[in-house]
Structure formats: structure tokens, C-alpha cells
Length: 497
Image 1 (cartoon, rainbow, N blue to C red):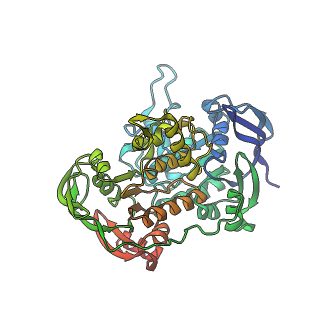
Image 2 (tube, rainbow, N blue to C red; image 1 turned 90 degrees about the vertical axis):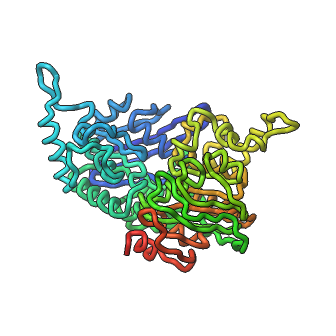
Image 3 (tube, rainbow, N blue to C red; image 1 turned 180 degrees about the horizontal axis):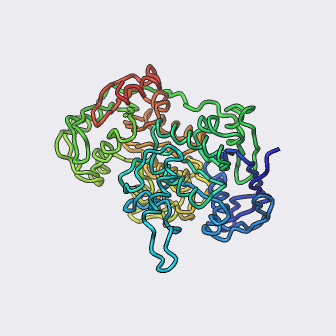
């Protein structure tokens, strides 16, 4: 039997009377990649924050290689060999790769404490070459791609001799080639006896790189499974507490023949090239491509967030001008951005405020804002999207990443817009919540809303879109009927094949 590297027993944690973790246990074996799965709000983030010293548990025990330990803070966690790679990067763009890797523990001279820059570069180069990573240690991190940045994060954790590595949604925003590189590095890390906890909503990744999976549901253990002997259906049922009948709900209606939105030779200062397309009432139109293809720039332009340089836009046959997001909202356009934390949420304010801020007109009674209507609107929206915990007075910054995403989606969905633009709408959301969002998209389309989905999830595009436009380097290079396309076909077109 492999040695148990990490053992957690009877972990309890509450926030303001709400139980986040209840009697949770978890074990990580030597040489193992162990997946930690669960819906958004199941307790995964809380457990990881306890392990990394961000939160302190209310009760329970933690053992590292058989010795009981108390993790006081993140620095103490690192001293105990626990490193973490979060979905949101912690690198400093203005520093070099080498400076980021050794930030806070740079090699210094014994007398003056000056940084030994040559040694810094040499050590960084050695780490990079050990994983066959072609990155210049003197390059500025701000000039790297997202996949390269995540690899630098991993090496940064290893530079403090981390033996237990926590990877939280590590493939977010990465291309398929970058994901393959990451998985090769993980295979190398296993050979170097680095033990990993892997958190992901992409279950295909779990089956590719993990040995075991522990599922949390409602803050409690729901089961631990050997990956070699479990199937996808069993894992999903364990996560949800029910059998998922269909991941992609079948839409009842069909698009209208009436034209809703027409875009002709439209270009903003951030777009690569002018774009033309149309959207019918009740149509779900997908625009897909690899990361950096220009999808997000198009979305920001259509919402009036970026200055337009040329082109014509008409809604219901009438020419319109989109000079600001306020213009877009007045014309019935809502936008759910890719960068939800930076562009979509007030993190320090509560769920109620975040949902109602864009829909305050729905909470007005006799010319006055009704607190009762505000609360009911926020509660109904939170229940519809299964935000966990269901507490509309909780600050959004205290929710898990997936539940934060549900709040920003709910903010725009409850207003039932005429045109809804969604940029990577299901990124970071668990499979159950994805299905609920697909159902809401179908509902809005069936009532006549024009839906524009920008996503690099090709399988998602195939399943839910009526039409798909493939964008490459800012140009639309192909148009396909959603149900008649394939994931392989979309990928080939997006890559230039």
C-alpha cells in the first residue's frame, strides 16, 4: 500500500451559522493525483483554503506523513510543503519569469542581502529545462500566454519544495495544446513523487490524469472512487445526488424568420477585422474559435464597451448607435462577460445588490424602490440558478467561483432582454448548473430573445446552437448548422484546417 501523504479527518467549518463543511475526510496517497469533485458550493474551495491556511477549520485534524499539523496561514502551508495553483493567477506581469518563480525566497548574499541575479536566472532555467519548457527565464510574465503562465505558477510552487500540489481548475482558458503540455508535466511530477489534488468541472480531464476521485455534496463526503473502475454516470450522480437525465436539454421551439439583429462590416479599435452577421428572433447563434481568436473583442464592441471605428448595426430593421453599455441596455441588449469578477460583479456587496443593480426597475412600486420586491427578485433568481449557499445577504466575494458566475448570469437573465450576449457562459460551472443554464437559454430563445453565445467549448456549441460561426484571427471563416456540425470539424476550422 502506498504511504498516506495527507490525511484530513472530521473537518468542520461554518460561516455565519451556515455549514460549509460537515465531518469531511480526505486522503492523498504517495504518487497519486486525487480529484476533488462536487457542484459549485459543495465545499471544495473551503477545504482547499483550509489546507492552504486561508481559513482555519472549526474542528477536525490534519496529518502530513503521519504527523498531526496545524496550518496557521499560507506561509505556514508552504513551509509544510503544500503549494497551490489557483484558477486566478498570482503572478506579477511586470517581473520576469525567474523573479516570479523565486518571489519571496530569492537567493541573496549573506552580508548585504542583495539578490544574486545570476543564480536566480540559472535556478529558474534549470527548473524550466527539467520539464522541457521553452520559456526564457528573463522574459516578462506579462508577455507570456496563459498556458505558459500556469506552468510558471507550477514551477513557482515547486521552487519552495512543495510535495503536495493543489491544482484548482488549472486548464481554465488554456488551448488544447497547452492542456496537453500541462498533463505531460503532471505525469512528470508523479514520477518525481509530487502528489496532487486536482479540482475540475471537466470530468474528461479527471479520467485522463487522476487515479482516484473524492466527491463532496452539500459540504459532506459523497464517496471516493477509483478512476479505473468508475464511469461518468456514477460520478455525476454522486455529485448531484440524482441522475442527470440529459446534459443538453432538448429545445421545444425554433427560431423565427424575423430578423432581430444585423451587423455589417462592424469593427472596434480592439478587433482584428470587420465582421458581418445576422441574428433572428429566438435564434441561438454560436460564435466559436480558439482563445485569442477575437470572440471577446466582438462581444465588448456589440455591448458598446469598446469604441467602434466603422460598420452598421440595426435592431428590428432600425439603425442604432452603440456608444456605451447604457445605450446597449436601453436597446434591450444584455451582456454576460468572460471576466466576471473584473466586469460583472461588485465583490464586496451582497448577492441581492449584485442581482438587482441591473434590474432595479423591476423592484419599483408606486415610484419607490421596494426592499421587499428587491429581496424577492434576488431570492427567485438565486433559487432558479441554485446559488449555494442560498443567502442573498452574503457578500459575493465569499461565494465559490462557480456561484459567483451564477450570480452574474442571474443578474442579466432575470431582466429577460431582447438580445443576450454570453461570453464563455459556462466556464467554471459544474455539470448540473450548466444544464440549468442551457434550460434558461432555451426558455429565453423560445420567448423570442436572440441569443449570441461566444464560447471555445466546441461540444457545447454543437449541442445548443441553431447556427455556428467559426472565427479565426478576427475573421468569420465558416458557418455551420449546429446539430449537423461536429467537435472535430469546429476544431479543425478554428485552427485553420
